[in-house]
Length: 433
Image 1 (cartoon, helix red, strand yellow):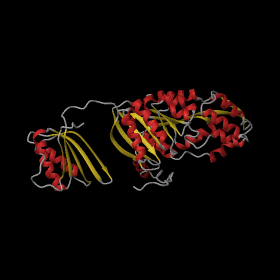
Image 2: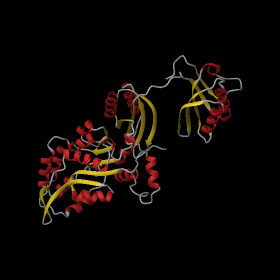
Image 3: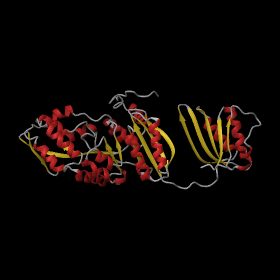
Image 4: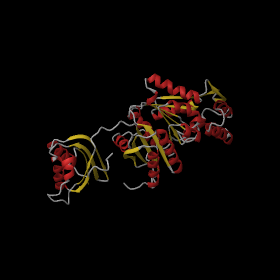
């Protein structure tokens, strides 16, 4: 951005006297990047802006960040013919113990470039991890414009604003970086749609809850290992889903419907699930679950979680026991995709403003239909075909992919007595603040 021949002048204003001024800048440059570093305290930015206003400077761009009490402020300014802006800034910096850097910038408009957001998530994010991500972005011709932290726990997550480059090349590099490290990495176009999601549709088994309902039911019927093996193969996409489901349901024949009360006591939500749902609701989003499981569990579960819509399979019952059959159309891969489209149309929401979350091969259609498809602790086939993949065990980590900061979630919970004491999250090995 700064041509090599242009002058660069760095001044520690705490150490200068009245006679030291950057003469080349004062006589030649008209567009200056002013970078200020200091221990953060109230009034620094206001004082600098007052200097710029008094000397007739124009502001072309400004960015500021504070990291652990250390301020970095960058202001791109156009200075007047008298160049008094520079000398006044130096004097202000000397009075207020600031370190100021002046870079002369060629005065030409920046070309518009495509922008992306890269999200990095992990239990830890090491320098090696960050370096691999940065190398992947650079390898695809992208430039990191800004980095900030989204969360410190239950996972560490960062958002990187990236401009330029080939997104396909960057994505491949990021996938390789994630495969070689215990981190998750997502890349999305920076757009209005990313910040305007309005509908989130989720799978249930092994996504919103821990485990598979049908496997738990099969244990009650004494057919656990057989059913679990078929479930694994179906979720991995190795066998057709509908016949696999009917085969497993047939093994449940004779179970009393009261078994669902026992199952409800055993099955637990995925860590972070309640936080995830209530945060989405606070953001005004519609939520839905679509499951290859069964309405006798999913409908009460949806009500208990405050979820707006629910679709699952209906088990046939006679005289209070399961017949081993499914009533109506099976909720398979195609039906899940249809359900997402139907809900979006019903609510007047463009598909680009929808999110789908799932883990199995039968989730692939809805993941591809959604504006953002997220594979959550998913089978390899699903990871390879989703927009992004998460392998951390906390469902609310999806919020970070959506650009939500953990501190905002905590602040909302703290201000709401109904939720302020719910779902404590263990944070083993959390680094110090």
